[in-house]
Structure formats: C-alpha cells, structure tokens
Length: 260
Ligand code: ADP
Image (cartoon, protein in one colour):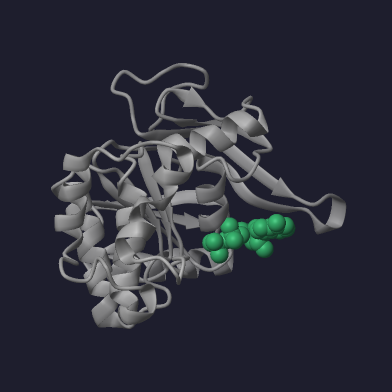
C-alpha cells in the first residue's frame, strides 16, 4: 500500500503541516553494500498533533526522523519544516533552522549535571541569546509538574523527571516541531508513562507538534496517529490507536517485511 497524502513535489499544501516529506529517499553506501533506508516516503505531520513512527528494527524510523529534522541529507525527494524546504539549505542555515524551529528529545536525557532543572530548561535559549517569554516559561514549568524540584540537579531527580526536564527544555523555545527519538527507551514503564503523559499534554494543552520514533506499542498508543514503516516504506497508519491495535498491526507489518 502506498500513501501519498502529501502535495505534489514543489507545491505547498493548502493547510500547512508542521513538517512534511515528498518522495523522500535515502540510500546509504554504494554497489553491493547499498542500503535503501528510505524508499520514496511521502507524509505530513499535522500541526498540534502527536504522531508516532513505528516499525521493525531497521525499517527506517531513525533515518526518516533524521532526514525530516535536517540532521541527515537526503538522496532524493524533499522535506519541509513549516514552509521551509530543507533540501537546498546550507549547513549554516540548517543549524539555525534546527536551533530556532526544531526541538529534540533523545533516549539519553542530555542534561548538564552541574545545572539545576530550571537552568537546564532555559539553557538553549540562554545560549542562543533569546530571553524566554516569562509567561510561556511559567506555563511550561507548570505543565512539566516539577514544582519544588526545579532547583534540584539532575542527579537528584528520577529518570522520568529528568526526561520531563528534557521535554520542557525542548518546549521552551516554542519550536515548530519536536522530534523525540525513543524517549522512553531508558525508562521503566512507570517513568515512561510519566514522560508520555507529559508529551501528550504538551500537544493537547500547549498545542505543540510532536513526532516520536518508538518500537513500543504502548508508547505509540499515546499518540493521535501512528505511522508504520517497513523496509523504508510507509505501509500503514492508525488514528486514535490503542496499544493492542498497534501491536496487532506491528505483527502484520513485521511478518510482511520478513517475507518480502
Ligand atoms: P530503524 O530506526 O527503524 O531501526 P534505521 O533508520 O536506523 O532503522 O536504518 C534503516 C536501514 O538503513 C538499516 O538497514 C540500517 O542498517 C541502514 N542505515 C542506517 N544508517 C546508516 C548509515 N549511516 N550507513 C549505512 N547504513 C545505514
């Protein structure tokens, strides 16, 4: 099944998505060692939506995220963040775009151990020389639910609390989109639920757009929409997912990709 929900290449969609890709292809290596990590993927990430990207290991999830976040170059096709086409930007322009318009949350929390939670949250803005909007910062901080712990150092926080700080740090600059790469990969299920609940409330209450790569059906079920990759292609999608429905589709996708 192919899914070409996005507009024709080069043309802007009528309702602008937070990010989109048209016929995105990424090939690594050459000759016999060539790997087609992404094979003509077209999709949009709706503004103010929580989308999960899932699929078997090696299906192209990270490659798709990296290409759409401007962290990796593409072999063919195009990717946009808002109205900006990434292909064609210089390294310097890409760095600026990522800094000003994209938030990242990774598996490891990447907090600075000598700074407090609050200082970690405002650090990227401090480095960029931007003053955080006080009211917005208060909103983010109250949504993160760490009142009373904001002046603690990361080592004094649980894993779930540290990852919530990392999400708050991504939120504070009001990025066009947040990409989260296996954000619960280092967490037990209770801490994972805490972080996923916070990601979901950042979408529902704050209007943030979040795209999350995960292989975990429970994590994916927190999203509004799940897209499934297999062998570098978009093969399925599910709205308002339950973890059982995601697991069921994953089994089908997995079986189909192993027999192809
Ligand atoms: P996933 O995130 O779903 O596990 P990836 O996007 O990491 O999948 O990888 C997709 C395919 O591309 C895999 O076959 C992987 O081995 C290959 N791949 C990813 N990155 C590179 C790279 N830098 N060089 C060569 N092959 C790569």
